[in-house]
Length: 155
Image (cartoon, rainbow, N blue to C red; front, top):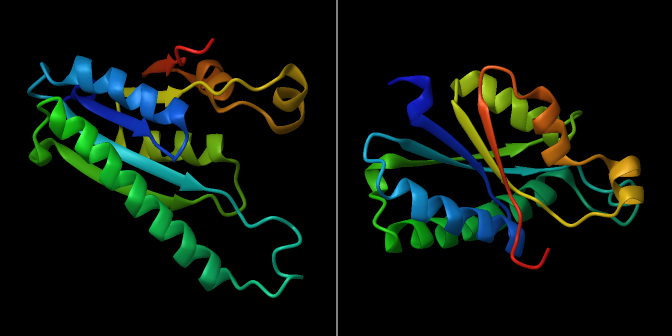
């Protein structure tokens, strides 16, 4: 399959992510040759997580359950738009020792995806400076692939 026919969509439980997914559903339903991978990436637990008695296995279990709910919702949206399940796959990743952006770029490279889609969160300049922005990281590192950064209707 040609690279341009492989689409990677970063999904999570946020409305901006679902908005981006609905946008892709409208566009991709007519692209019968395109395969779509739904990607959910979760970060390491917060610093105080273990101090409060949390375990890594419990954290991963909770995140895996969240990913399954997100994938189910995403597949429903795509199916309602006419995207066949045969064109879909899912990938759930733990960004251990990496940022979400770094893990997203690694998955993009591993899978040789031609297009990456993310929803743009409305973060402030301060938040972006402190924590980074996934959409900014993708825009800066988009070499040999296309990035769709989909904003919500609220902006």
